[in-house]
Structure formats: C-alpha cells, structure tokens
Image (tube, rainbow, N blue to C red; front, side, top):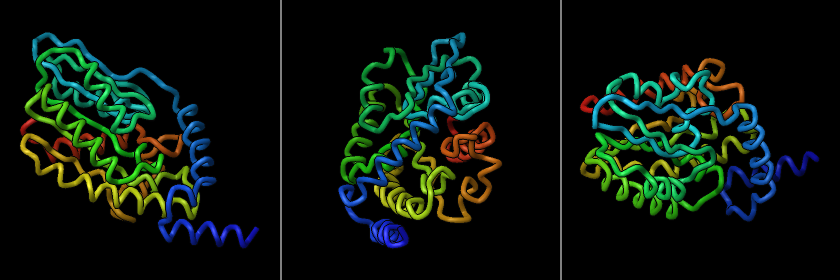
Length: 243
C-alpha cells in the first residue's frame, strides 16, 4: 500500500500523461458527481428586466451558480443586481467545458447584449483536456461571443487543486494543470473587447485555498455565496466600464 501511495505521488508531481493517471481520474469523476449531488442543480439566476438591453451568462456550474445558498447570491445574481433593468439570460450548465460553451452560445436568444460573461475552464482541467485543445475551444467561444456583444468577459480559471474535495497528492497535480491552462488562456485578455478576470492564484495567495470554510460550498468544490461575492468583487475591479 505504501508503495502505491509513493508511486501515485511521483506520478502526480511528474505531470505525466492522462493515460498514466487513468485510475485517479476515474476516482475524481466519482468525487465530482458526489459534489454535484450534494450541491444539486438548483435554479440558474435569470431576470426579465424592463428594457431592450441584455446580459448573457454562459459556462459551467459557476455560471449557473451551483454552491450558492440562493440564486440571487450567485455570480449571475450579483451581476443582475448591478444591472436591475437589464434582461439576464443564463445558459450555464453543470459540467460544461469550453467546447460545450461554444454550443451554448450558438443557442443564445438573438437579442442585443451589453456584454457576454463566460465562466469556464475548470472542467477542462479536471477532465484532463490538453492545453492546446482548451485554448482552441476558448478562442472559438470568444469569437462566437463577439458576434453577440462588443464586450466579452472571461472568468478564468480557478485553482481547482485548492478544492478541499481533492486529496493529496492529486491536489498538487491539478494545481499544476490549472496553472498551465491558465497561462495559456491569460493572453486572451489582451484581445480587443475582451476582459479577463483572474481567478487563478497559487498557495496562500488563493483565498479559497487559504479560507475554504469561508468561501467554499459544502461540496468542497464550488464557491459558496461568500465565494461568489468575492468573484463578483474581482469582476467589478477588472471591468469598471461594465459592472
């Protein structure tokens, strides 16, 4: 048993291929499923508004607001409160990767949007998608979003290795994976009309890793209401022209 633990640690720290960590990934899927069951699907926050302007939210479970105590306390809910007169359309789905977000955007209602808010990337990391694939999918997502609105906001990408539900040594492995993918996505924030809200932080610089009881939901994976409030503050700081 001790030999297996030492071998798993070496595999994780060496950053080997997905095939070499097939068993840990299967275990991770079970953990993610359990986390989703604990949080439940819940209702994604949406609002009708009373004017023609609209906001589109697309992405994964964090776009949907999984982990928040109430939809109004999710990231989308807080954006809606900042734009009370705007219609807010939320297409977020649990488990979505960037490739899934592209499909969401092709199905968005054809109305004028003030901006498109995208929350994605964590599932690409957890599902071991290659960095090149993630970048290509993210570029496609941004191109589709820019057909819908002049301004696109990309929330990228939390340090999933700091999620309490990940055991040692796989937390270190997925932190390294998240860092690598974030480094590839970060330059997208320099594109015209694109704002990137940094969610990745190392070690004690990450409030979710430093104070999980304060910011992480009971599932050990998603932000809770306080975590989404923190995300919203980062969003507002990075996009003062929008929020």
